[in-house]
Length: 80
Image (cartoon, rainbow, N blue to C red; front, side):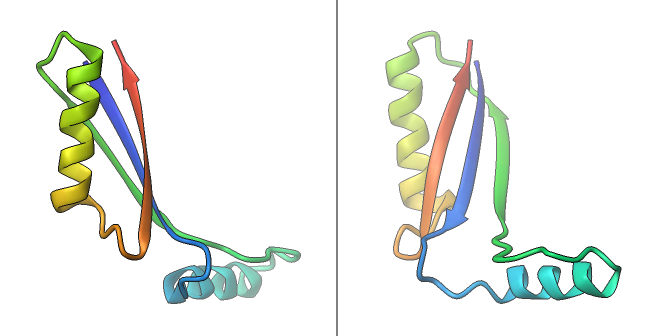
């Protein structure tokens, strides 16, 4: 089963890397770009046939290691 995890900063958390990207895009001539937020994308294969068990394992992975849940949100997409 393939899992895709998207991790983004919570709204209200400053994103200096997003600001740097926004500034660089403007310097390259891409005008009208506002409020750039960056994040992480993790893709993994999980050896689990039960989708509910796989989701539970992925949530534990995110809560314990992959995401800093104080400042980050995450979403999990499963593909069987």
